[in-house]
Amino acid sequence: MKMRGECICGEIAFEVVGELPKLYQCHCSICRKQAGSASNTGLIVKQENFHWLLGQEKISSYVKETGFRSDFCFKCGAVVPNPFRDRPYIWVPAGALDDSEPLEIVAHICVASKASWDKQIPEELIPFEDMPTLTELIDLVHANANT
Image (cartoon, rainbow, N blue to C red; front, side, top):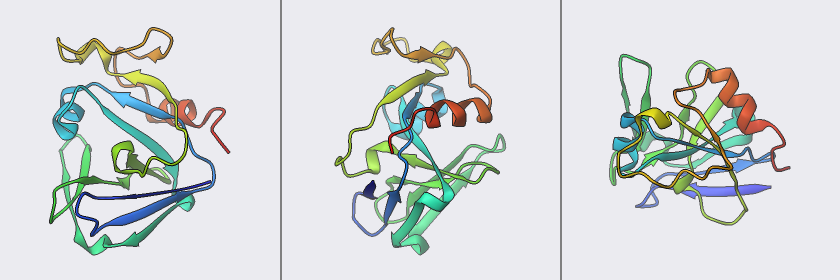
């Protein structure tokens, strides 16, 4: 499978190929601020399945002392993929993807810190009160991934 994505202005573009992992939604205050919404939805793809197509030199980064990283287009400000900590994976904001392949949300994380007005966490999905370990999160989104 192949999915393409880009920033709002189209100056930065990328593609994800091969195995498509499941999505997760994070409800922590940092992710809410980054997404400007109730949660931030993302994929964690294997590094070898990710390719920049255009504009990598137009990416700016912000890294908190905690290790949280946000990469974004310096022209339009849209969030774009970035390395997933010290792992051989890339975090991809689901909203930046062209919607051409079916993707599935498998978990909601940091639900203990969700916004008081956030009422959209389906009971059938796996909720994590806090942040699972990085290994747990990677294993969860790659279990039974779409191939």
